[in-house]
Amino acid sequence: MKIKNNELLEHVESEYLNKNNTNVKVGDTVKLGIQIKEGEKTRIQAYEGVVISKKNSGINKTITVRKIMQGIGVERCFLLNSPKIEYLEVSRSSKVRRSKLYYLRNLQGKATRLKQSFK
Image 1 (tube, rainbow, N blue to C red):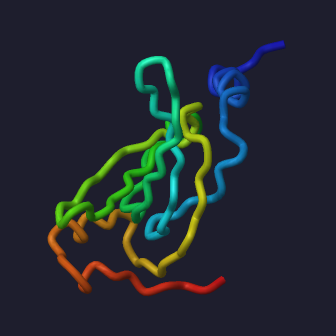
Image 2 (image 1 turned 30 degrees about the vertical axis):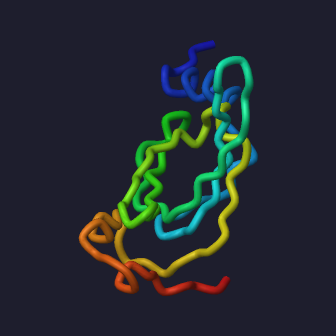
């Protein structure tokens, strides 16, 4: 029985895929719960923002989430299949025509709003 390398890799990775992650798209406003370890205690910290990019596939799938905090834009990259992500909720979906929303970095205030899509 001959198994190809790609099939073997997918079989091994399927064990570690996070099944509870919903289908996240670019332009969605998401709320993530991330485990933070402080000393010996762990807690869950919420992070909410707009998904401006998605990269890779399979176990290496990442999203970049941007939010404005105290007037400064903050971007974080998250591995979707990481065990440190407790929950991922899509609170709002937006209609976008780009696969990467890097142009939001140059906009301020009301100009950063995206048109909401209702499905």
